[in-house]
Amino acid sequence: MSLKPRVNDKDRIQGNGSADVTIVEYGDYQCPHCGAAHPILKKMMAELGSQIRFVFRNFPLSEMHEYARPAALAAEAAAEQGKFWEMHDAIYENQSSLSTRLFMDLAERLGLDVDNFKSALQDQSVDEKVEGDFESGMMSGVNGTPTFFVNGEKFDGGAEDLVRMLHEN
Amino acid sequence: MLQKNDVAPDFTLYATPDQKIKLSEFKGHNVILAFYPADWSPVCSDQMALYNEMLKYFKKYDAEILGISVDSKWCHLAFAQSRKLHFPLLADFEAKGEVAKKYGVYDEEEGECKRALFVIDKEGVIQWSYLSPTAVNPGADGIIEALENLK
Image 1 (cartoon, rainbow over the protein chains, first blue to last red):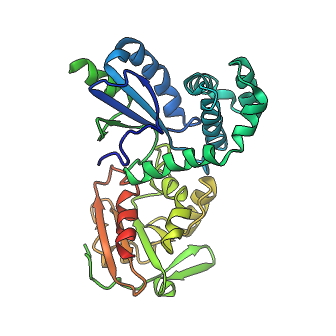
Image 2 (image 1 turned 90 degrees about the vertical axis):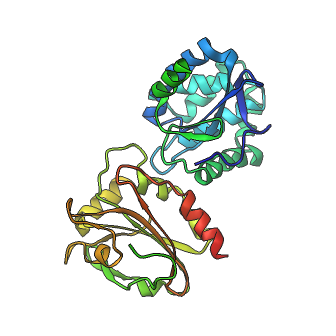
Image 3 (image 1 turned 45 degrees about the horizontal axis):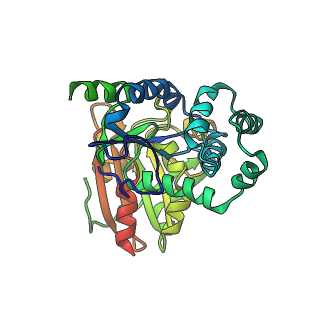
């Protein structure tokens, strides 16, 4: 199964933008498996970030996880002030205490303009980004979170398998 | 296993402890039948929970999704409540697996439905079917593509 659409300029990207290896994660901020994968991926990027273009797309399972969607909106709202990855990391690092209040606290801690952040949470464009990510996951055959794609093809395994594969190649 | 252009065999199964659903009642709408082995899959975001997140997309294609397993109506009720599912789970319970057998997706060895998907058009004709390895959650891309092709 392949990634639809391909990585593009709407995506949240870190690492080396022109690397040969592109990894896309579809994740849910409240999913415990994604929470467990987070430090593994952080370490992976610290070690191999110069060789990897890493993309995160939202795949909130809202019926199962109450804060999955609000968290996704918070990260995307922070992106409007250039702090997507900071918010992304902070949410995963506080996964056990997700709440609306937490997102406001994190915005403050990250030095965001909180009023702008609050209004961005209501922006249609922010909502559409999250929705668009989910839709792309659905079309790409995402069947749970986290799901990874390597160079556009679905990767059959978790974060640890991914790191092992990268070290072998 | 039934294939494209086969007429979808009609059936009547319990959807709740006191309500039955008949497939032919859905004539005029598209139907997605999702046969699956058992309620209470341990995987986070299992197949039924995944489809539960996609109901509004299915609606866009005027499609109703029905889950089917050999679990009883009471088991389905508890499972649906626990996972907050907003679509019917049908109990292929008595005679056990009868509907799955008609569709050619019964696993005799395990005594469960295989993991299989059917997209049925508004006339009650199967337009797409897919048998997934039992251990693999097939996701929804195949369903969406099939529904897209019905347009």
